[in-house]
Amino acid sequence: MEKEKLEGRPTVSLIPGDGIGPEICRAVRKVLRRAGAELDWEVVEIPPLEERGRREIEQLHERVVASVQKNRFGLKGPITTPVGSGHRSITVALRQDLGLYANLRPARTVAPRFSPCGEVDLVVVRENTEGLYSGIEHRVGEDFGESVKLISRSASERIIRFACEYALGNDREKVTAIHKANILKCSDGLFLDVFRQLEEEYPQLTLEEMIVDNAAMQLVTDPGQFDVLVAPNLYGDILSDLSAGLIGGLGLAPGGNIGEEFALFEAVHGSAPDIAGENKANPLALLFSSLMMLEELGQESVAERIDKAARAVLRSGKDLTPDLGGDGTTDGLARALSAQLEEVG
Ligand code: NAI
Image (tube, rainbow, N blue to C red; front, side, top):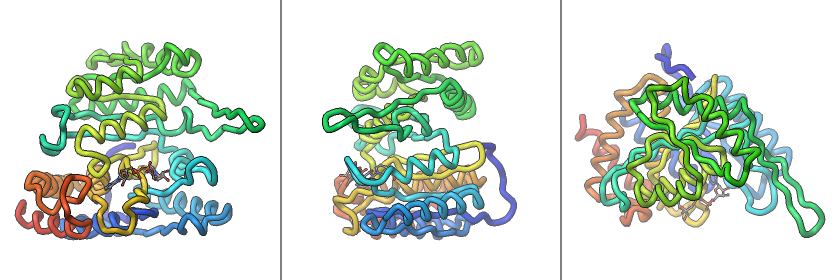
């Protein structure tokens, strides 16, 4: 998606989602308003899980797709997907149907005490439309199950090029392809072939490859060696949660789903049912996701100001939510962020 200066005040889709989604969205809206972000929201609410029949899901899906297609940019809270049975992930379907093929998930140390394994500054670029999330799966009788992992040359090339162009455009030097091509020779083998074929087009970059299990270990023992990682869908999903753990947890890990025409920003985390409704959720992951969106909307200076305020609050150690070792609340953290905005000017 081309970065652009938008004319006038943009309207952005806001999908609060469920679980902790509505609470953290409220906090983020408050901070953005206080910082003077120039945007209006078009809110698309979703029905609670227990009221979601097939028809409700279809209607919801259509409403979100239409809203993002109209506004081009969106901010999304998490949406619960029933585990083990029930309906398919609405989030995965949205990414596929809006052509949001790249899931960009940066992990940056915000304060040394939240990075127990050392300084981290890496970006996971996850393929977002195929792999094991193809949705093609079935039970074979009572005792077997089959889930199809799809890897295509075109989607692999698209995501690897995205990762390389992202690296070039953001002063990064290395792109590491994550795979399991020693075992999955047909699917990951193809992904790796494409990566190797593109190598000569990017002489400015160091291109490396790493088997996913080793990458999981190396991320913990030596995270500083990584710069940009590009991975098929499932590995990207898992390694970006792992990377969140390297910077203080899911409450700090932002993300963006990017396509040719549209972009939908959302935190790495899910709906956190264990703390939903308790005013304990950390809104910073969604706030940092919204800053990625503000940058795309050409409002870099507002994003920078909020980022500075957030880092100052994190460094101070005050008003932090329990995931960061504090005893603060979602609302309290939003208030502290708003107050800090006055300090950073
Ligand atoms: P989760 O990310 O919701 O929670 C994992 C752990 O991290 C929990 O202990 C939770 O309390 C904590 N956590 C997550 N976000 C936090 C925050 N902002 N502040 C403080 N603590 C936080 O992952 P889980 O439990 O695997 O999934 C729960 C539901 O979320 C599932 O239905 C899943 O499908 C859905 N999900 C949705 C996503 C989306 O809409 N993008 C992404 C990931 C999961």
